[in-house]
Image (cartoon, rainbow, N blue to C red; front, side):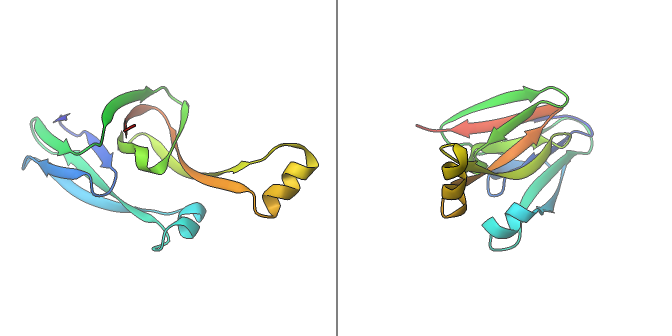
Length: 135
């Protein structure tokens, strides 16, 4: 992806291939209660790339079909954790747990006694989000 001056992108771990020398690399640790329970390290690392000078080039690897979604200010998109490739640094990311219930009091009891739940990454705009999927 082309990279401009002072542009910052956050890249999902282990997808970075190469970058030109005028792009700075750093990383940060994404914390959160759900990350504490669903990862061994109490969270996970995200790579951050920042354009320092003139235009540069950043290459990342995406599986299957890759597309870009622009999130308007305040727009929310929930994504399976393995489906996001990159995001603008202006896009906020949270980890949420979704419970599956058949409804009613018996559905609520079923969830408490071993119902189905899964974890999603919630992205909140404004900014661009890169996603990938394969069939």
